Length: 302
Image (tube, rainbow, N blue to C red; front, side):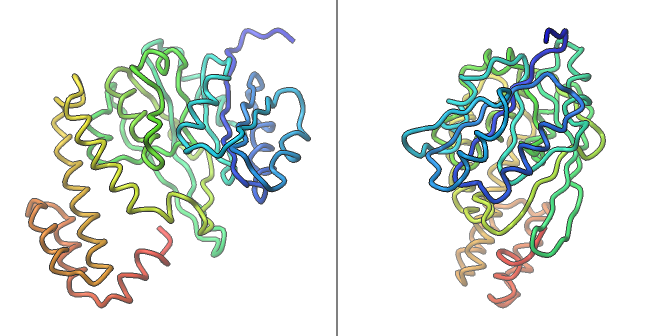
């Protein structure tokens, strides 16, 4: 059936995601905006993910990798298969509100808008606790805001394909953790953005989330990113870029505190400006016993 609506390609990267996969795919099929395709990239799963995906109709295009690729390399390969004017992203353990795409595509009437995002629910599968992760910037260029505090959830992100293609490169294959952050920061340096001022998706936290279980990897990748991005023609001039090494030192200091290496933690503290709240947090961490720090690092749901 012909339609004047632009096509949205929804990228699902899956590795052994059978537990919540049907919920994720069903949330796409339930969209009030109907002109979409799913690019399902099976990253060499060994569970029932393939049979679940293949049980859906022709709007789901199934591809399977021979080998398990790093996540952002897999995303990049999936994007190459997409035919849409816009690209969205959904992981196997998350799901969308029915009106998500309809509200977001309506914001792309301004041709200078390169990406649209929105608030989302973050939900603890085990305890039932949940909270809304809100977005707060309404500026034409939010680069400074994102470098100061990055909150965009990839499950809410829709990118104009032209904006993606005009970057020097899409997803950076060397990242396993911060590839979405890197992509959005580079998009924000070139394009305007907008957001839906209400929750449009649900992020499920269940204890096995890759990003949750590998926070040190995120910090290590952020160090590499910062060294490279200092040469970027636009991002390097942002007045808020100085926040990145502060975040790196804060996170590093808190890891040292958690592991009982409090002297090393204090050395990281000295690199954090005195006026920053992160410095106060590290001082508090210095005074707390290790078992309490482990609770906040591992057990506490944020």
